[in-house]
Image (cartoon, rainbow, N blue to C red; front, side):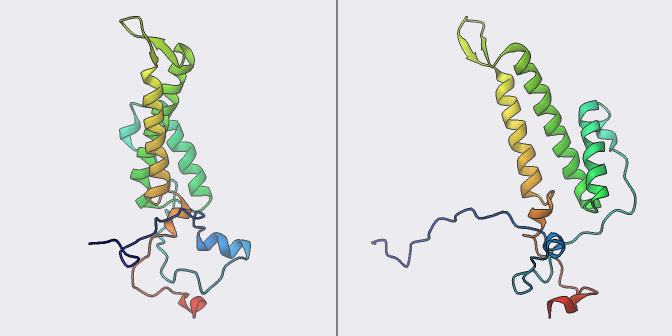
Length: 164
């Protein structure tokens, strides 16, 4: 059964990252006809949360959590749904930093027990941790830009007249 144009699906090309509607309004670049009417917008936290107890064993991750949470909170971008992903992000970034410190200390290439030169396993660990942190930041709504791709609930907004 021959492949025809009807069966062909062009590969999806990556485009520019989405910009949150809030930023578009501030920049004066909002095109109302292209904006999501029900953009996912979780309730923001009313106070700065404390780091979770799961980070008590990891001082670097806890410090990253405090710094990142404070910045997100001060920018008005931190909600309760962000906290688990923020925790995972900080754990992965702390592991990346720890592994890269070992790579700097030991070198990117080390000798194994047989005496052969091999890539330092800490390099792979750092790469994997950084990849996970980037996925958390971009794919799960941790970043404001990725939130614009998620449609919110069907309940009407208080100021829904903006899109009419």
